[in-house]
Image (cartoon, rainbow, N blue to C red; front, side, top):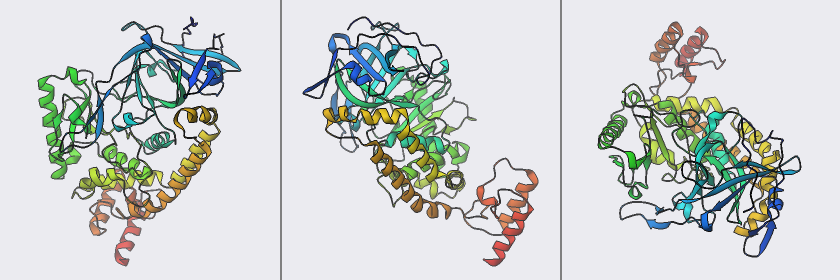
Length: 490
């Protein structure tokens, strides 16, 4: 490849960067089997272009493996980490510009590696990739150095389900929502299609998941545990065990495995005996479930149940920091999500009603604005530079994969879905914990009056939405009067 001017990006924004550089950009890129376009033509579509050139033009490869007897799923193994160089181009003010250049590969100094990632998603024609830079950078070009990281993902999101799910993740108040931007991807002068460039799930205390470097954990309740060398066992399901995102499985010590086995055993027992509130951040578990119920996820096995434990002290709870993987979303319009049924029914059926209270509370926070917020978000995306760039790139993507992506149609479907989904969800969730069930025991009686008075007198920090009995947005003695009247009339 001809020598490219390297641009050092300091506190620059993808949308506000206004300095352009001359580029030798007339080299031809193969698109599909029979078409070629200049690099500048692909840049002109409006999306950032990620150009990857690997050493000796080596392609990332993997072996495909099926689950052993008694386990579920299909996955990959022996994914090769191919070294190379990554450059990001964008047309800014009518001129082609280099936004980022990793430089040639030199371990721990410059360049990057690329590998195939995923489980069943790696079987698709448009395969997902993981990029690991040798030097930290923010490939989304935000104006704060805290976002620099080495690990980035390139995901298929042809019909906007992933960005929709991540927006719901943010709406309900999950701990962290990965940021993302659509790009056109070229590897070794071959156009690979439109991809979602996305932050990876990993430890980064500044901008991703914050756990203690020395004694913190990021782990997953994983149906693909059988494809990992290191895991700890679950007693809740024969199909799942726990695998590690942090520390890396290669670095796990025997004493860490012993600790994690003890932790997950105590956690699973606490769910069975209804004492889970002492071990987990209940709100994060409830919100995770609500994201998948809003999205109507059908595949419980592919929903990536990630957990964090900040450190090994008893005072830090197990947290579910984000919902992830929406490949099978929008499939259960008139039913609970598979994640609800398979993973969370044990909480809904528990005599400990704190999960139900948090679930209803989370819904109450978003229900009035859910449909309008989603419509506004999707319209905004459709009309944005990113949305227009994705639409303009659709014909190129079709030449490779045969499917024409219509952004307007995808936005229309999302709006149709969320409206119908709301109509099904709202009465069922609101019936779980009715107004007046202040002590969240499943019934409304005089004990709720006592609980409500105590709450008002003591200024409780957490106020269940059901305590605002007269639904005026204020918790005071008028709610006590309304609750007494409700009980007398029942």
